[in-house]
Length: 130
Image 1: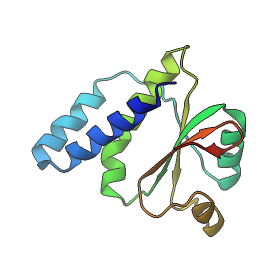
Image 2: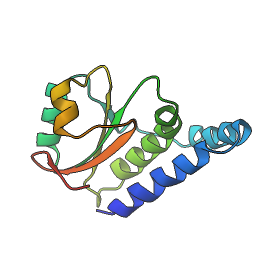
Image 3: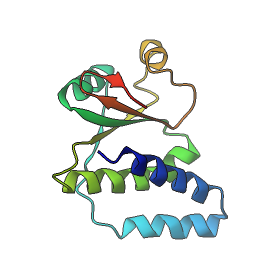
């Protein structure tokens, strides 16, 4: 599984958000032209997060906030990445997103969420690998 691509793609997105609004607008347009299969799964509860992690052998989970500017800016890249991985049968990586209103103190402390967005790679059973 090409995990370095995840880091590279998301780093590029954060660098783009630091640019001017005009460039950010253009950046968002780039991603809106990509066909997506909606492979990014929204996880509406801590139980759904647990089930998601136990079901998939490799998972990328974005812990996000609805009010967070960098979260909003990076979501198109995350959706694109999730669609690319879903379309490639040689890659076993499933992507999910969890919003702050779902996170309780238990989930926040378990996954050491200190800021938004936080991206975590997991193996089957919820073992954190990065």
